[in-house]
Image 1 (cartoon, rainbow, N blue to C red):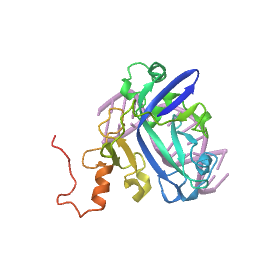
Image 2: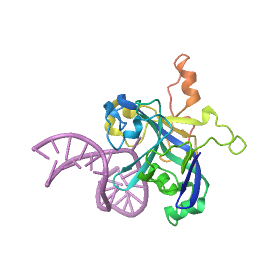
Image 3: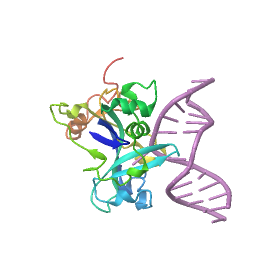
Image 4: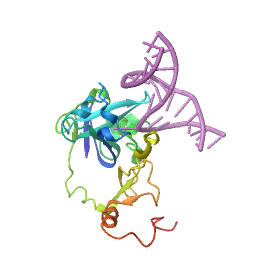
Length: 210
DNA sequence: ATACCGATTAACT
DNA sequence: GTTAATCGGTATA
């Protein structure tokens, strides 16, 4: 769960879609090649902080910095299932936006929660922007088979790194942006099982007829 | 100083 | 499928 308290409004949502960005080796990451600038400085901090940056001059994206100090890795939060403060989210997103779309997509997520560059570097353990683990009573535990891996969005310039399946989303969840295409998506549990067994008799394809 | 471009979105054809 | 919006970061001069 991601919680925000901005402008007197409390909002929160369950994280349903993320992407991993893996430090210097990953050409899709802002820290590719060890690049270190005022914008991405927080990526080099210890995990647990927010990395917020502006993109296309219009939108903001929020990441969870992970890893040890000087290991610039982060997880982009791409979509939430709105849980708390839906009225505030609707007010920020404008009329006519379906509830499932309030925080669907990284730019929409930050707008719904009122996140901007003033929260860059925020400590996600406490403060106005917080990460929590919801109780099992509120949300049933997520089964590995319901976590789908797929290529990351919007990084076609990154060569071989563009095809790494480092996007993770909840299968068939209505709040996931750019729903992974059947055949390209693979459940995490299937990855695990195939990686330690012989190749499949049948190549991966559309898992169910349409 | 100037030019290019992006971890996007909404509105188009 | 395509494109405009819009500006800080980054590279180049």
